[in-house]
Image 1 (cartoon, rainbow, N blue to C red):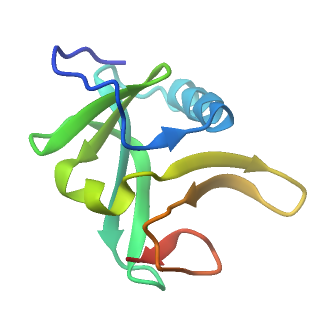
Image 2 (cartoon, rainbow, N blue to C red):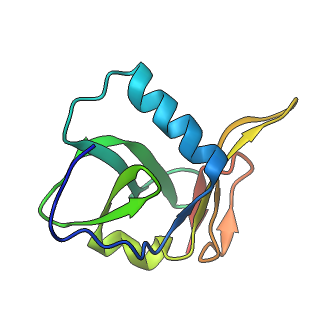
Length: 118
């Protein structure tokens, strides 16, 4: 996906094997350009205060870069406070299908599971 001499392999987040499979599938299906990695982050908004960001993007100046399995992951340094220890998983059940975020830093989460307060 991309190469850089300052890649940290001790990522502060975990992406389960099933989530990695789905992310790799999306990367290939969406024909993500070379040099783009997985962006994990947060933004203000959502019913609980913050919403998760999960998508493909180029590395930016404020990003840390991690290698998780075959994925190159970019995360803005200031987002780490809210994301350290988070697990991103893929759920494929009868009632729910999609990425879920298990965040130990969240004080409250909403019913949809995509926003939280810290």
